[in-house]
Image (cartoon, one colour):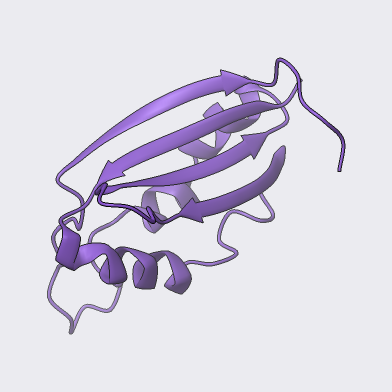
Length: 108
């Protein structure tokens, strides 16, 4: 059964572009992870400052394997990986991980 993981990240209004840039720089990093089904970064279109990172996984075990992987750790470091560049701080000021399973809907 597909599980949905949503990372709700509170981002100062002037930092959203940086968050999007960092995600774009890592695009595809999770694509080959066993059990990964899809990903979206959702930008608020109103006055909210919470961005949503929505991922879909085959099951809870696939998500847990990703979180425990070396690739996850590397992707969530605050630096670029280049020793000559300074470490960057987090863009978000708060985040929460929400977990859902699909209970209904329509087929595209």
